[in-house]
Length: 331
Image (cartoon, rainbow, N blue to C red; front, side, top):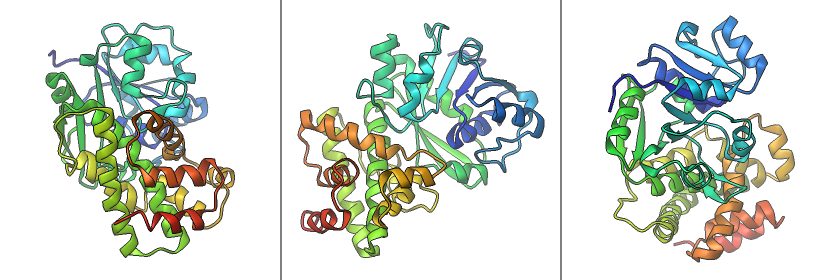
């Protein structure tokens, strides 16, 4: 694979900002698309994103900033999407530039609601991108710790190992360790599911459950994740690897976890709408929960935690009553 491929980041949020920071460590210039004209102009003048990870200073000479998604796509060979899954289709509708021959990596931890597909499958089905040109970037890694240059780990998954290694190399630095995987479906589903389990952990905390219960909840969650992913895509994988268990742990326990924060608010009695309004960032697990629940109507994996979160978020059931029943199903 050629060593001079150019990168673009699609998205203006915290994870997109973290990815742009990582790429700027290794690339002379990257394209960066963000929808907000205000954020774009602020970044050009003040050298930081005003809305997310504002402590990160950028050398703007390394950035081709644009609010035209087509300009970013035409610039790059490798395009990293970091838009909340609920808004991906809206952004892709603006696209007239061809994706033919482009390498698409998803840093999105969600299911596309319009198609009920994980992002890689969505690009394959809707845009005819071959799976060899599709990859996934997953954790365990919080954008806030990237901003602080705390040691973090990424897993880069692609069925074409050469492409996985290339993207991994361009994201690596003294504070980012990278590893590769060929399990694009499993790692992407793990990234989706861990956000639902993080909401569950937040709900439990908001309801007053302690560390002992949290440990039981998370240990059950990783087993539930294993069953779900095995139903969807059976292959040999070690669910205890950092891309699965590690990502679940950091999302379930970290103070930076927006899904845990969202769940905590629900547990304390907020309505879904009021919790969403109070948060400035999207909790991907909210959208993922509905998609995973509906998908599991087909696969029929045993998923009491996902079912409990769904009942609270979408059926309006009382969180305390639902979790009281859930405690009897965990071991």
